[in-house]
Length: 127
Image (cartoon, rainbow, N blue to C red; front, side, top):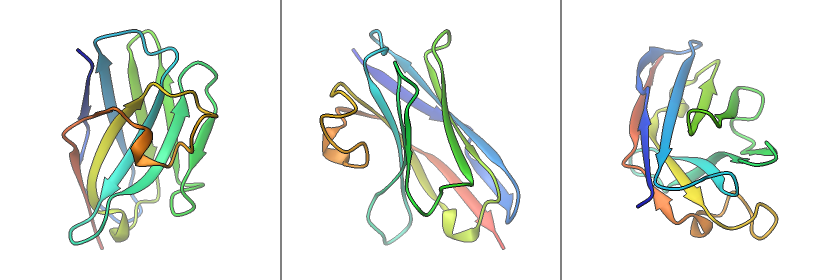
């Protein structure tokens, strides 16, 4: 059974950094695409970043490009989201998701492609 579990959320001030982790288990993820999404109160869930586990190719939303970095550690079956220069508008619940579709088969920003989701971790950025 595939599971993805997020951790690392918290309360920080604007301009500070935070690193989220997503531990994946249940199968070999070398052919998976892993994504980070976020949902702020009263807003729809939105894409933040994705990585193709086998090639390391990444994709970012314009709102986080240049500030967030997604990476993976295959030995630990873990995905990371390094978030720098955080802004109050980054406040949201952050979700990790796993997709068995190849990276090129569908946009990594499309939530429909993801089969497995974590429960989320809260990130709050104060001004």
